[in-house]
Length: 120
Ligand SMILES: [Zn+2]
Image (cartoon, rainbow, N blue to C red):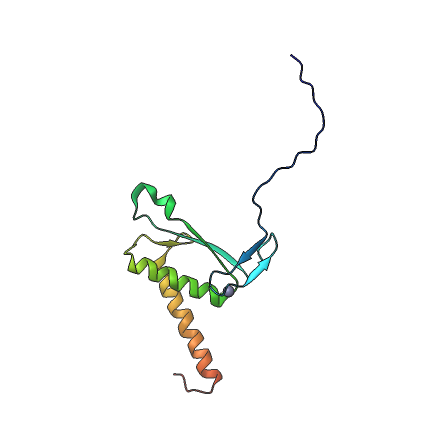
C-alpha cells in the first residue's frame, strides 16, 4: 500500500499566551513574553500526601512590591492552613517569611527617612 500525499492548509485551534495579569494590582501586559520586571513563580506543599502535584500554584507579579505582597499572602495561607511543608519556588516558606520581614523593615525605614523621621 502506497501513501498518497498532498499539501493542504490545516487550521489548528490551540491555547496561546496573549498576555499576563498581575495577581496583586491587576495590571495587564499584552504579549506572548513576560516583561523583564515581571516575575512568575510557584508555590506548593506536601500536606495532601500523594496528591501533592495538585497543590502546585503559579503566580505572576508585575513589580517587586507586588511580588512581596503576593509572598506575604502565600505565607499567610500556609500559616493558616498549617502547611508546614510549604515551598515557594522550591524554597521553604518559613525562610521566605524571614526575607520578607527584612525587606518590609528596610522599606519602612526608607520611607521614614524620606519624610525626615529619626530612624535608629
Ligand atoms: Zn502588580
